[in-house]
Amino acid sequence: MLAGAVLVAALIIAGKLLIGRTGAPPPTIAPTVVALTPLAPAVAPTAPPATPIVIPPATTPTAIAVAPTAPPVPAAPLAALQGAVVCLDPGHGGADLGNVRLEDGKVVLREKDFTLAHALEIGQRLAAQGVQVVYTRTGDTEANPTNADVNSDGEVAPEGGEAHSDELDDLQARVNACNAAGADLLVSIHYNGAENEFLQGYEVWYSDERPFSDRSARFATIIHSALGEQYAAAGYDAFDKGIGIEAHAVTGPARPGKLTPSEMPGAVVEGLFLSNADDAAFIQTPAATEAIVGAYVEAIDQYLQETRA
Ligand SMILES: [Zn+2]
Image (tube, rainbow, N blue to C red; front, side, top):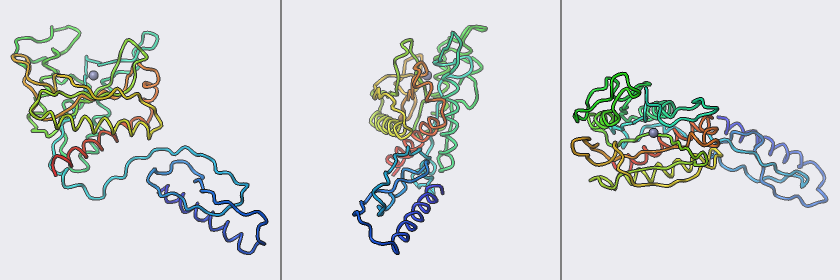
């Protein structure tokens, strides 16, 4: 709507300038063709460029930052998305904060909050397109809040201890949720942290030891590019740490006696570094939420369209 209004305004201005010139004496200086710059910000990147018009040479176009907007929602859901099942895994939760950002010794940002908020938003948008979405958690809890011996290895977290669930039991619970749903894709959402506060950027991990590793690699490639493009469109120069191969518990192969593996392609995505000042400042902005959520939705859509066509 806004883009349309701006375009209309631009045309009205163009019309007035042209009409004004019609009855006026011919200019003594040859006019120069200058591209009209929209006068208002928040022009959708997809808006057609304004038609070049004739204006007096004294006018200089001014560069205006174009705010990114949400990608248009398709009017009709795509057939390839209908009935597809996607398992979203918001990393950590409950007693497990994940990576944190410390300022003056105080925890100011927690990975578990961003992973959950983003997963729920991604899931909502996918569901609106006809995708069936399952989550490994939907609240601020562990995936195995009852501290059950989910992987049957005879070990659980100590009662009253710092962790409310043994890590492998927690990860096995996540894998089990995705397997039980018969998901087509497992997307594990994480944010990074490091003692070295200069480390920053985004990276994607998948396992090359699975029967469907080619599909995991494909999704890793798509989400990696989508994040890079969306960060750039949001005006944030995020550092590209690339795509790596890792036998992460939720996407990797079986660990005999310790872990039954996921049954579908997937990737672990580390969106940004909470421990880095630039990444931390950006991730708290609405533009970052839009970029990240948009990248996931776009990447999952594209993956499903490619693999379910
Ligand atoms: Zn994590």
